[in-house]
Amino acid sequence: MIQELRKEQGLTQEQLAEKCGTTKTYISRIENNASDIRLSTLMRIIRQGLGGNLRLNVTH
Image (tube, rainbow, N blue to C red):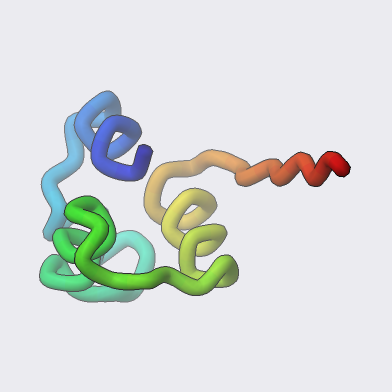
């Protein structure tokens, strides 16, 4: 999801990392499912880095 959105916006991993205050390595690990990500971090990447909003829908 993050990789697709990043590429749609024409951003490199390094550019995205700079925008949201993390490292290129961490962005790469997230995109390759090599690292767990906290919800707060995901929200920061989407908001600050990609200019979007994250919505969650919980059903039972």
